[in-house]
Image 1 (cartoon, rainbow, N blue to C red):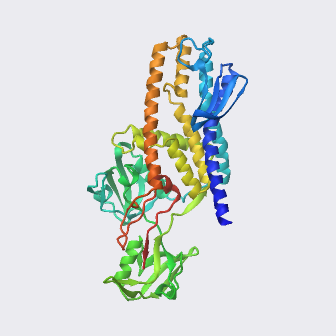
Image 2 (image 1 turned 30 degrees about the horizontal axis):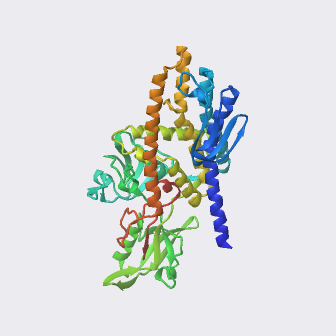
Image 3 (image 1 turned 90 degrees about the horizontal axis):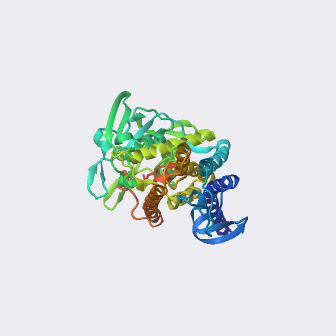
Length: 494
């Protein structure tokens, strides 16, 4: 029965992704269709997807199609082609389109995407979306000394070289404060202009500044993702039966705040302190049920394994996920956030000193994959939030004033209205084909990297590694698209 339920749920999740992803495309093309009908333009086809049609029907001299390749769509409007003498597919001449009709038809697609995004954003506003708990600072939990670059050569971590230390409290990035702790600060670091990161730090309550240059992080496909990470609360995982920890009163889920009066900043420090104390009694300050308490008299037991001696108290130690709270962003706030992210992404793309590259962008394959991961791991509300971003982004990207995009048709209509004549056919055709080839090559490039990411996720090799733990095992790094909804975790047996 349980397996049947899982299968039904998986089918429902896939249907959810296909429907909403497809609807973002449908609503865009539907906008063009409705306004083209209103303005009396000749319409030949309305297609969701490209290639050979799976299903089609004809109504009022318009062919409606659903095609095999679902990542896109189009409305066939011969009068918007660059031809000097537009005509139907049967060779019948058509009147030239008026500049106002070109502008209105072109702008309708992005407008419908924006309206659809606002419609969905109302639900997020009312339901709420989980995000990092408000915090204007974060504490550094680990700083590795070295890493291996894309060529396998060992390099010094720039943050370590700059002097960042475990326990430093970060209060600002590039002179700007943040509201959502590590998550927001991490994004600010990645988008740093000219690849220069400046951090305001409190160390032993004394302010100082640390600066360094971003370098490509091979764990994140060469993005300028930080090599250091935040302090996450250390807590107990499983507590072994009849172990010293259980006898003293430690329970699974306890937050380990101090050991013998020393603040616990990461699992490694805790394990190190247990080994140093040997069989001498340990005193823990813990957090439990929103209150603190002291547990004393915990005596570690000596254990020998493979010639090595270790002191164990019988608990599994792990980093607790960051606290998350429910936010209710207004539709306008969600829209402006997408505009801001789009601006910072393109600023990074044209910034030679920032590691952001075109390969880090996602096309239809990558977006579909990310949607699947989010639906699977974070739920439908988080996926709906991404659909809103996709719909808004589709509108913004199509408004770029480039030939073959809606923004190009809008610009052409404005120029024709001002000049009171059509753009010369050969010039228009040259620009259209040039940008069509460029856009096609760009999409193939992005799709290639999307496919590589999907392949790595389906057939993972050796897990990514970050910082050492006491057992010389390393902390796995989640995929960049998953970090927003997952806490980093490292485990040791003690």
